[in-house]
Image (tube, rainbow, N blue to C red; front, side, top):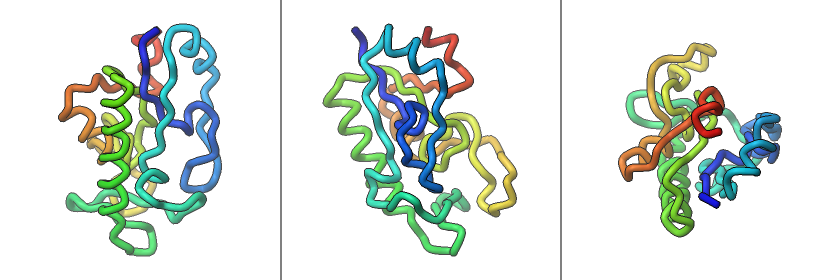
Length: 143
């Protein structure tokens, strides 16, 4: 069975900034086709659960309180890439709009709840290393 890197929040792990998850029922179908390799770049980068939400602005990542957390996001992305390589994952299913995992959209960096075209820190690194990226909106392509 092929390994699939997947955002742990989509599987039901409470790793979101607010201590909750983004569980999706299609995960049960994915488990029949893939070995799920769980990741959370933000917690891997040393951020706590729960944590202050963060957004990308001018190439950096800032918490809503103004703290520059770019180094945490970079570290988490690097650790996820290492795991991806270790488990030979060619595909990743990531949480859209996340500052780590957003594939097509991210929040605008102003904490205005506005999404803009863009890519998260971890998603960008994975893409640069040839990993095929999917979001919860692309599930039919994986099944």
